[in-house]
Length: 364
Image 1 (cartoon, one colour):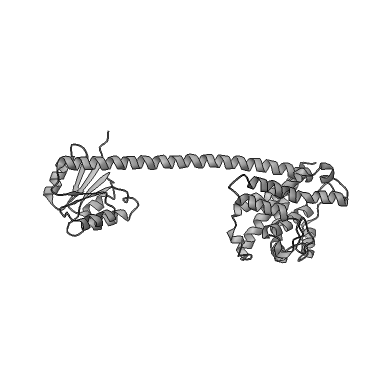
Image 2: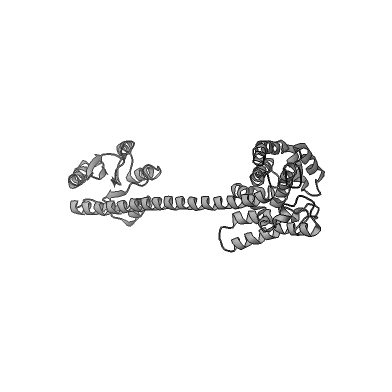
């Protein structure tokens, strides 16, 4: 078994000799006549414990330990002070600086060995506990990551099933998330809505956006996929997807303590069909009464609906969609968000251009 390494620092050669003789049969011992020399040795070797004299010329023990504790490489080395001063104040100063014990000179070799043995055992147990905690944290992190990945996969699969029900080209949810990301980053870069937007967890917001149409799972296919114009009664049924989705998310929120992701999702679900002028649904909210995330999703959702092919219509060009959204400024949409959208709409077009051809080929 490899021996533990002990450094002894003392300007008195007699004390160094006595200490070394007492320990050499049990430990690998290195002696130093000054703190400066010991600190130099630390650049290439870290001991398991240091016996440090308090009263030394050039650099006393308090100054040495202060340097040890100031560096991450040496701060955890156990230090025992050697001193001939038997006063409470000196002990308190040393202990406050990080020493683990005091041994008074002249010392008894058996007592010295026993004190060192006890402290090395404590230090060994401390390191084992740290390693155990680190390993435990890694295990918990790995398990948490697995659970989160599973939850994410389930949510993705579920929302894509809903997506496919009324979007024959597919990809609405994925495109929506990418549009949302573009808008959110632009909002932060421009410094608008700075009383709210910087507080969001962007990853959670973007991920939660995929649940905005989850309530459509409760809408009958004969209505959701109807190729012609909906009757008033059928349109009223379509409208319920907002409140059905909201109620479903509220129920999940009631059974979990992790609510930030669900809170974002609930806002998207319940408010993405509200309109700036108050003519939207399900609650007829107006202007700033509509949560900001709902106002953002309203524009994103309409843009994708306009450029996408659906059972009841052909997709419009990007330019046509932009013109329609611009005409709805301060009517359907928040004017500030419309202005921002118009300044970055080319990024929306790029997303559509990349995704649409692939998705259309699935229905060829």
